[in-house]
Image 1 (cartoon, rainbow, N blue to C red):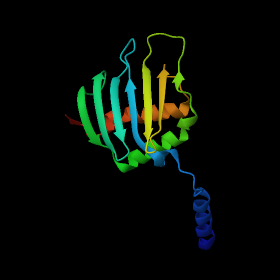
Image 2: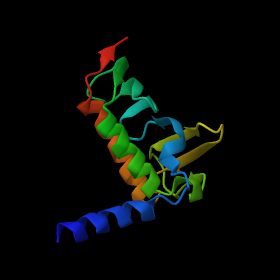
Image 3: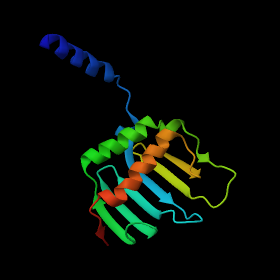
Amino acid sequence: MKTIHLLSAVALLAGCATGKMKTADNIQKVSLSTTPCFGTCPVFDMKIEANGHAEYEAKRFNPVTGKFTAVIRKEQMDSLFVLIDKAKLLSLPDEYTQQVTDMPTYRFSVQFKDGKSKWISDYGPMGPEALQHVYKFIFSLRESQTWKQQ
């Protein structure tokens, strides 16, 4: 019985090794900038390098205000990269908009090691659910890290 489980696990892993690079394996930097809304929407810029080095400029309506740095743990970076893979980022439109006013815009970008980049401007924000999960994860980093003020 143990042999069957072991062979199944090996077959599963071998099936995953297709030779195609995942988006996450090629990520160099992830950035999210948010703009004001009519209300208390958080306004900040966050840049996260693939090695976990992060810069956070909290402008308005954040737990703190100022410029900060932190190193994000590998497990959290892996989670972020999985969320980006699930969002199928490269197949998404570059812009989302809606016919309402006073909403924030999220400007999300990923720079890749091969020199390419993907930029998304999301007013509302109204991008697909998988992209919303990426945003929520990045928003959570504002409170889950030990940020050092610059």
